Length: 178
Image (tube, rainbow, N blue to C red; front, side, top):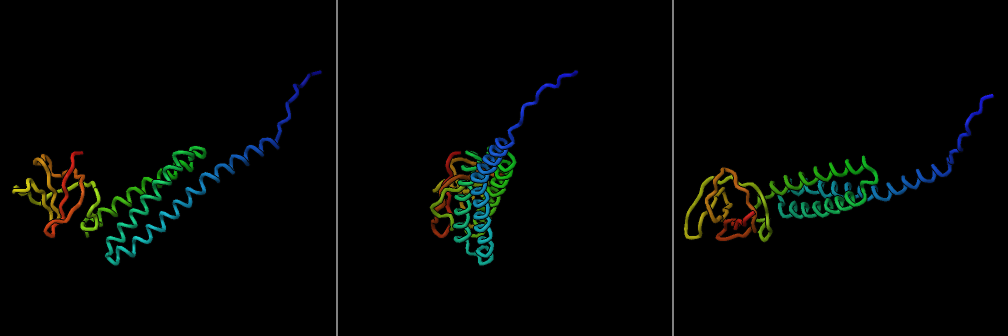
């Protein structure tokens, strides 16, 4: 007579409790991420009529709102999102796309109303149409935007970071060292 080894009973109640505890924990963490995503999209949709109305200050205010929402989303996702790996990857991708959208929107504001950035530090790539040497120093110029730099650029595209000012009805950015 063959002796069959005794199989231990699997405690299905315990497995279900652990499973539902995990699902609950995932919901507690990922549901706020979903709400951050929805809040970002609401602000994004609000930027569209502001662009149509060419209210660039309002568009820039929307950029600030979206940046704040996205920053909070990143904090929650990177702190706790790893508990649900697929959701973590999804929200990380969403957050990267949101960063891209805000950057593109800020560039649209800069192109249409650089004065909206007065008092703000900005960073962007700049291609000057002409370079002027005068008593103020070296100016890289394109349309109404003038960038004051300490030395001549060595490339066609220049990485600019600085505070936006208005002087004599011209947009001036005093470039800082990167």
